[in-house]
Image (cartoon, each protein chain N blue to C red):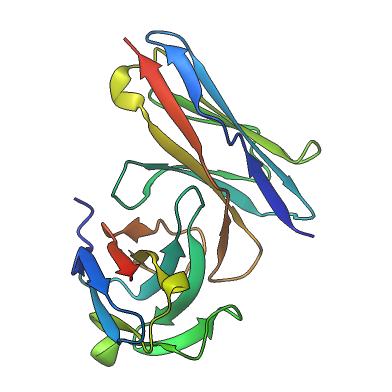
Length: 115
Length: 112
């Protein structure tokens, strides 16, 4: 257990529905990242926060995806009008500082299946 | 185009032997490279970081080398154990303050 928690662990939804995932980072970690991982691939960067500010979003990120980190603590990732191609593992990671070499601690992920 | 390659086929190693995994990259000049372990249904776990000016890094039974001329990192597990069976991912810094680029990982199977 790395100390990063994600909820839910699994989500099955029908195409067109909206889903929201939650990530609780390690307390006092300033950086929070969201990644997406499909079977047989490495994590793909989606977005990251420095405290409550969302500083970067991947160009690959559809406008159906939105993320928030109110008060710089937990974060939520929402996917609107889900598509079958959104099926993947969604990983959250946090790091203590803004140093690029600081270790990222990953949560267990939320596995999304879109039917 | 920018590319990271790890052995896509699973690596089968006899218990007690040294396992060596490869991470090759093109069109990058990373400041550092990281190795992670990922078990099924779990997030990656950080193992080691090696900087561009370091040739080798060790941690217990793990050793990482980094050859910026060959654009390659090797990850070694000595005295391998069945508990070392997992997927191992390499990740490169692309000289930005937020983003790592990840390889697809190599599945390592240690047979008793």
